[in-house]
Length: 532
Image (tube, rainbow, N blue to C red; front, side, top):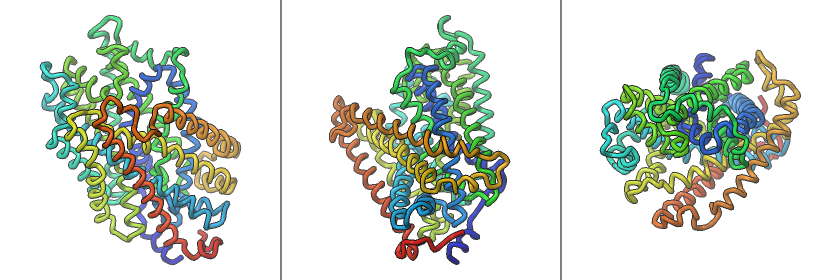
């Protein structure tokens, strides 16, 4: 008990409410907003995608966001900043400690895998954006004799550029996290987030004033119409699943990151208003800025076909547009710096999560732990860097496989576990804690209807149909069907699957040991001994 108290007293905290909200927004506002959302919306029917997107935001996004804020704040009371002990504390409210240990271990294992493996490839994209910021400022992709597709392939296959910008991004992350919550993460968020929004507004204004520079039938306003005027014939179940997945990705749900940041809250900090503020800032960046920048610009120069190029939209299509745009260097630099700031602030949360794991479970001081995690990201990020360099292709099978299993699938299960434990095992006891110190109180009906019933049922349906979709696409086959035309990349996909299994299993073991170290006595006696 005394160890837990001393840990809590020594913990860092947020310096101000605005700093907390900006850091939370920085965690949520990432590459998924400006890079992933536009092509997801475009590939799934534009306006037809937005209907299930907003439904998923209300029935999944808000309930899980509030749940994760509560889980984190409650765990922080006991001095915990990672999900395994947090979920143990939640689960033991409705089950015996020995069963709660299993819940905490599984949830902690998934969160460990998410924060380690998503960031192992996410940091590479952050490095790409920094590289492209430099190329935009120096005219590195302005030569029309080489296609932007060729430039992208050369960029991710060039060992010097890949490792230089990747490691520079990692050094910045390690340095920021080593300074702690208030002096590190909060300070960087207070600078980067306002600049990001300023760049976004600047680019949105430029996008809306483009007119029809290439084709009279292509204009920025028609791009906006494509997003906001639903064509119901394009509404599909695949698009609905993609919309639900985008809500998870864009709000950083099912990753343990919201709970991690919330663990540094003070006892009377308002989590309802903070949850709504985080979602509002994220949606402003995604739905207002990203949809007003990327889709109108791409539509004005490339037409509807130019919107559906996936990862190439940000790194191939838009550089092609900046070549032909007046002051293209300036707008290109602003665009890629916006992406860099968005990616960097999101990576901070994952980097901080693992550093806190070392700090709380092993006793490694934060300033040293952050550099240990730096080394882990170098190790687990190497396959992402080496695959295009060694295979001379930009197919990125390792990247794709890890993202499919960790970034799009397992996070759904973690979100479901959080809802079920909070709604059914903690139950109504959670509501006073959620509303503690709140200006706005969460209504009893919201907790009873959305958190206990609607959100878990909806998410269960999404998981079932996502599993069927994965099965139909061959992801459960030993040999991935999507690589049948490029069999030389199959070893990279199998390596990714092996790494995913190893890290998830390792995370469960680490979480199990962590919980038993802190709550061993009550687990042995199978009754709650520690209360705060």
